[in-house]
Image (tube, rainbow, N blue to C red):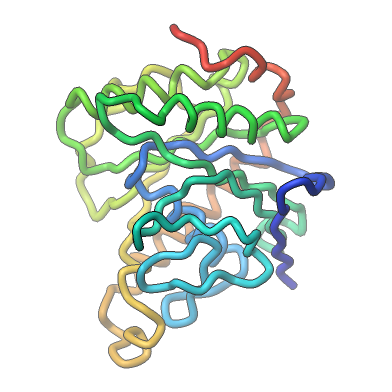
Length: 252
């Protein structure tokens, strides 16, 4: 049976077996990835999806994953805190995975506020004793290295200690076929890459029930398989102490 829980501010994170830190610019699909991961682990499919991160079609968070730190800004959902979720099921071989969901950089040349975001991420990482993987969430549809994209990738790179450069997984979101994003734009190496489609959370459970074929269910199945592959990959990645985050961000 699946077990889900959230770690509230001030509570200890232990115990857990594996841990991942999720990074990315705002709007790239970090929250959707977390919601996809949660639903894959508990065995849900379109029609009975539940969420850890509130969104327009799914405003109600699973009670077990609600830490009370709601990320709403002027009526829009935007991650502004670090959240710590613990997930366990047969998909994870009954091992507990600690998922650290972090705020995103602004994808803007104006770095106002991003220094604070960087510090929130560093503080979140340092609450753990170790990390197995850092998952970078990137919108796959970007077809050029614009100044804004270059800026966001730089901000991500400056908070990844060199000791973690062999722990990076790239997840390309909003993927419905051809990928425009180029790996060579990254300022850090990646060890594994997957592509997922975010469309499942475009429709509410009621809309799925009224019109079951509003999306191709095979899109969800493909994304679910990719998420399961990430879990399998995670099992092969060693624990790296987070003490290496002390002193970051770092200008490269």
